[in-house]
Image 1 (tube, helix red, strand yellow):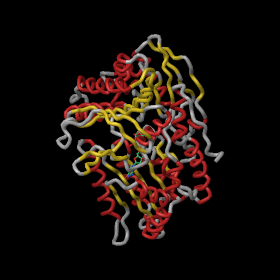
Image 2: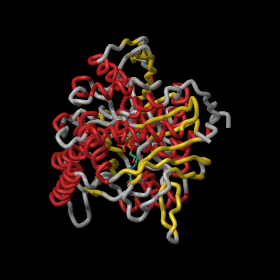
Image 3: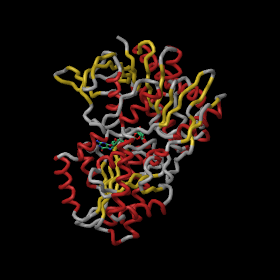
Image 4: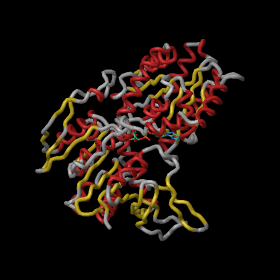
Length: 499
Ligand code: GDG
């Protein structure tokens, strides 16, 4: 039986584990993150399929089955795995997507690396994804494609299967035409996106930027411009927009544009935050901290995440405020996702050097000013740290959304804690009550963290209450329903308050 919903996401939705010489498919351990959210959509369709890649030359498993049926808490669904060679993965993912697209999407023209890109491999891999999706999709199915590494899938799929509905969601920012047009393949990418029925982004700014790029190169017309909802235009954010374009027409087709911020699973995070296990861990953390204030920062090791700028600001804080020495501690969790890439190795090296310098300069036998953690922390433990942190210091230079700040607020069932949030995280348009900071300005970075550390309890609680209302309202279900509405599919009533 073919599927009514086909999700095209480059990573596999499970872990492969070898048991007694046989491969078993285990559900990913961490229930947070985007993969379980996407899988939860399968429950709304008669039959679902997921398209991902897998190393073809994996010596442990040379002749794997292309399509396997998985059964987990989300029901039964097919996973179709594309056999890619190491060279194809390196070219399509590590080079073209991460060295050429990623810096451009985040506005870092100077980091853009064009020379090693092999465009024919990128096309070939995207074609293979499109073919696999076409093979799995039932007549009129919804095919939902995720992120820039699959930018050409919609055009190929439209050719193969004119009958399907194609939706594409961007998890990153989308830059203005001035930056996007650095990409020599700009027209091909835009034409592919315009082969969709729906193109989704986190926030209105990215939608408008997409339209500006399309207008600069193609004969498009826009039909509707709507006022942006109040909950998506916090005055304090550099990313706010007053209006947003909701439809664009190209070559006789109309494409729906969607601004829909991904949220987090608040119920799940709250249940962890309120668990016995968290209470025990929290007590341990507090005991170790004594009367020190804990500042927490969590993210992937990436130049877009502003880790260096944050550590530099922390050093200035300790230099200019001797009274804070011994009274604060920064826990900086920065986990490497692409450890084999030079750009990320460099950032990791710079973070370690700076952390060593700060600890060497200010530390003492009974006080370590900064704890740098480069290994992944189990999510349950992370939640205990969210609960313990007086301040969450989130300072990306550019970030599509940023889920960490939402997880922090969701975990604060005690109603306390301060969120300091970069104006350049997509989430900033939702959080008017966060302390805004501009990571490009020393003055702004330094004053925001001091303000947060000194904030009186009343103000902390007032701001957190507003932030928690937003996180709860615009949670992961809200995003899921938005996706369904954009495709004119039936939504599910929100029964949480009625329960
Ligand atoms: C992309 C966009 C957009 C981090 N360290 C640990 C850990 N994490 C988890 C966090 C959070 C996730 O990783 C990070 O999510 P972000 O949204 O902050 O960032 P990206 O990975 O860059 O995600 C981003 C997102 O897509 C969704 O559309 O918001 O802008 O760049 O969930 O909790 N989790 C655990 N241990 C860690 O040490 N368990």
